Length: 364
Image 1 (cartoon, rainbow, N blue to C red):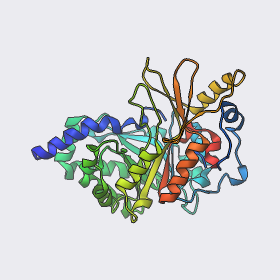
Image 2 (cartoon, rainbow, N blue to C red):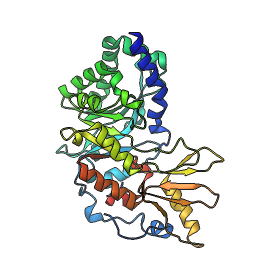
Image 3 (tube, one colour):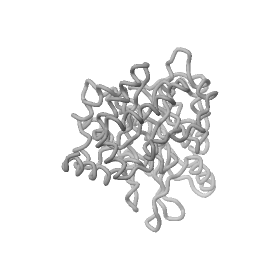
Image 4 (cartoon, rainbow, N blue to C red):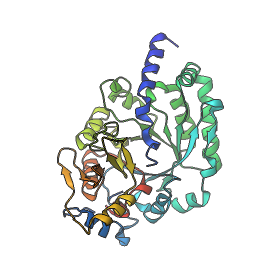
């Protein structure tokens, strides 16, 4: 491996903590309501759904991907109840460890659930996520240096699981994809040989440094071998103690316009967070399940029911907690605006993750 390439890989790994925040939160909204949202309105309406539209997809953009996780298993029920809303469902089951490329997580596979979720016509595809876990610099260097032989080992193990359970494809999260061209090509070839879908997770663009590794040219090249891209356009302010919006809408637009063109834009699925964040300068930022937020609102509404604060630039809601924390969280309005944005651009949606959200989000 050249010194230049090794330097690029080292730089990548310095940025990698920003990429693998997907699981740190143990982390959908489909009929807007023209009303001011308050704690009381959320408490009153969050579990009200239009059952007549439960299996009808009203989103007019690209495909919709719903993540579900074993640690928020309400998501498994949401996907079954609203499965007509989703094109892809990705259970977060698998991890690829560097030692021997061991794949762990098979114990979480629920074959009965997979059968319940899938449709006979193949309109809903179950694509479990595989994520690189516990990889350090030396592991990446070895993997990249000996790419041909090492990649084939990982591909074989992934395909063993796909074949064993007859999955419709996979979602892969491995960091910056431009460092793994041989691996991605081999995996793409293996999956497409059996008409399986290949979805790749992308880190969101935050800085010019990142654009050296992920840009329009890189995306266009990958779009030839990857079916869809799930970009993590959330956690924008999670590294700032004072906090802020999770997914400023201008930032989402920047990612869409920087990476895609008219030909491949439909392959991008913009990320929507289904969780809130609590910021207090005296402690680290904390993710919040929205069901916990509803319980908090229930305690508030007897005392006051002021409307949430609306950030016009970010197009997100927040509110001050009684302990001085600032809470930022998705609402019907914020999610609805992003749905309309996705429809305008012709991109799809990826929802992280439906077990953390509120039931009425999925009705949008």
